[in-house]
Length: 315
Image (cartoon, rainbow, N blue to C red; front, top):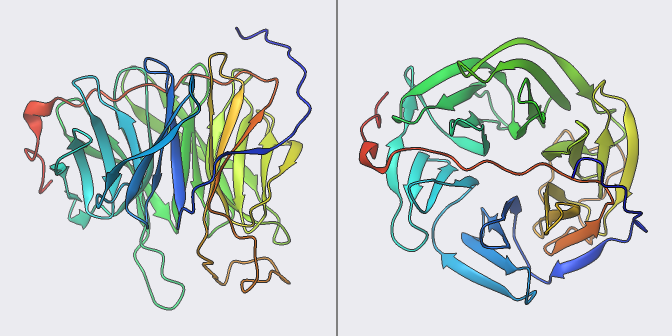
């Protein structure tokens, strides 16, 4: 339904009154008509059923920074210990913890239509020297490939509708970069600046891409989601009643609902905009929603074979 032209009133409402320490990575599951998201610091995974609008916590105690449904069942998960398969109830099973000698401390992720998982590592420490993160691809076999490096705080990641452009966020550098992506080989080339967020705004965090090829970027410290056209020009700003707006994803039966996560615990960093108050809120915590009148694109499941669990744990 790329031609969907429903008019939206732009009202942001609370979809689930959670108190997430750091809500992240909303994922729409069309097969079950439900939205999943994680509190990566509070160590819980949420589910919102579309038909009943009922919210439930489906897991506690498992660290999930990013995840996608896995075709063989369950999920593929990224976190500070690497990449894992997880059935949603038991303990995750390791896919990989290293790549070319560097540990995989992974943040957000996405999957392409071939089932590859795309993610990136982060080691940002504002108080000390730190390693730069890497852009990572994990293939069906569990093999890990480094696509690029040089990320200060890798974050939101997504693909254009045609899967020929890959977007990756570097929050600490205030950048969203773009690559030419080859869906046949899974290679990413020709890195370039897509957006540099001005110092007076929040920093870019999680992102979503719509069917028109526009990028919707949540702004941590900014209390908003910003929509950029395919050339990187700001097209609109959606204010959210949460100063730490963390990520966004399209969902709902027509993929026009934008679900927005947020974070309740204040996390001051040197990259805060000048004049930002890290002591008083509202910082966040709930899951928000808005009918945008714009259709998103479906999120692909990963296709990492369960039989490869742990096979590439030391790659």
